Length: 493
Image 1 (cartoon, rainbow, N blue to C red):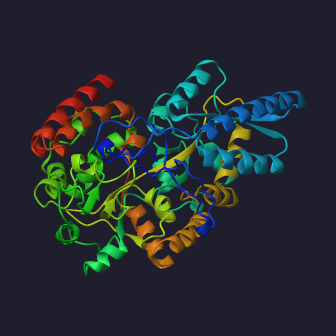
Image 2 (tube, rainbow, N blue to C red; image 1 turned 30 degrees about the vertical axis):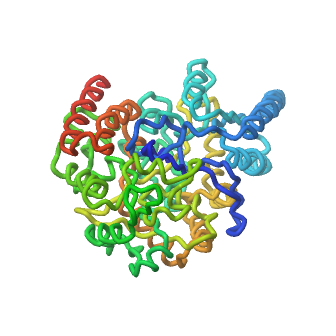
Image 3 (tube, rainbow, N blue to C red; image 1 turned 90 degrees about the vertical axis):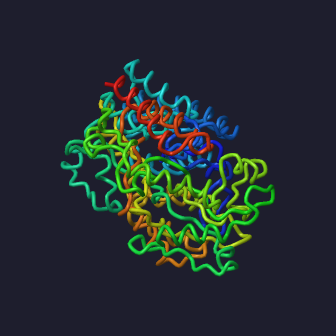
């Protein structure tokens, strides 16, 4: 779930409090929402806090786990046990789940398999993965929590084809939520299986502020959303003292170009690029009228309708990195699904989520993380056994209870929905409707689907930042983005 975020809007979905009221033991300081990635310049398409400093206790806990894992590994070798190396990131809440729940439970069920855990900070994730592979001691199981995505790993030949293992075990792919397994299917081969999701970029809103303004809330049904005009009018009505230090704002949208292109009626890249994992200049559609329509609509929210804060204004709304939504300076926020668990700690007001408004479409961007198995694994059967545990109903239920992240497994997702309905102003039926509708309306993020995306997004954002800062028109910014991204794509080929 690497979701880049506008760096001028840096209030991340990362610092979670204990979800004791909902029964989910999520620790403060957690950053659960996806693979670690470099946060590019403003207006990125994946909301990912790679630059957030990890808790020191997570690092020290990781050091201890390495020592313990090393001794366990040595004992495993002497006992003739199978071994699985698992590479993760140093996020405390995840580390606690890994060391206190996942590994002990799995090894109790499979005493002949020893799991060796390696946890590193996000910026070190890819270097560790690649260096171990180059040394002939590859990681067996990992997800895309570095600057690279799923497509990068596949194109580097690091990922094993799970299809034969799935067929031999008659593994039930219907246990996952709709559409998720197909994300990691490349030319008919399953190269990974889904662990978690964000349920797209829904519309989070402050129910109390909408009620006080006499505004009916946006529907949770993605097939019957607000029209764009309704959204704009509501945002204008909810905005007070635009530009002042005490201003309140109706709308904020994380300005990822993939999302805005979808709203304008076109996918940002050709379907062939997403299917193959590689894009050519002709596959990139930033200079089309449809993409311009999406960018222009959001640009107008800031500079014409004055319902959405500019990046300059946004930097004045929160104190010490506070999310303006959480302190009721912002009424509606279209952002990554990390809001579901970030906002679970809110007790001062009632919040809920609705479907995104419809411009040309109201499609959204999905962020789903897979577990992958190394193509060079010394014991693929043992690694596959471990992946099956992680993705089992019991394994996924333990994962969501420990972390609060929405699981890919259907049964565990039902549990997650029940608990998050309790922490919001939504009924269980509304939670199910808005989350499942997001899945059917979502296009998986290109940072998971395109090789070289880290270079691509930096080129794109260096152009579009000028638009969001009011220094360049949407048309001129998109022309520049097309020029700069095309150069990157040509070089990648």
